Image (cartoon, rainbow, N blue to C red; front, side, top):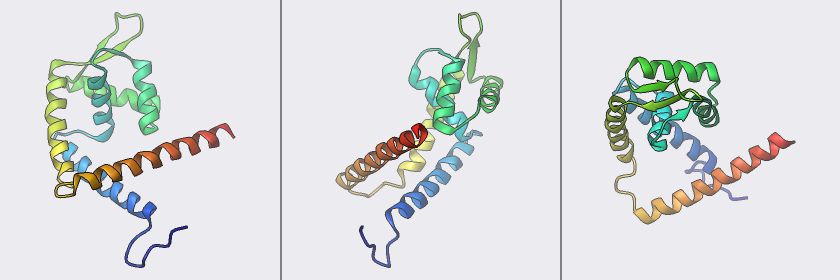
Length: 154
């Protein structure tokens, strides 16, 4: 076990505090566009898909990524529809949702703003150090997911 000097927090604490602060910055950037994190995740999901997605898949992905129950997912969807950012396709075999043109424009502007705000955190840090940090974070994420999988199977 690694012993940390008194002047430095443990790695877990540093991860947690950093994630909290960057998350706070990100949520403030989203609020600048009258948005929130669940809506951000919904818009990102649909933008990355590039095609309509069945609502059950949307609900599954938001539950997986946010632990967002289906009734909460439906409220997020309904708000996005009311804002004109999402359209339903009820005529399809399974009800589908997709970004509207206004939703795509909104997401593009929102993404650029949120990215600018959160990228400022990493400005001036050596890219090689950032790459090393990302490697560590991704390895930790993989191991945490595996541990959760083992716990779920137990």
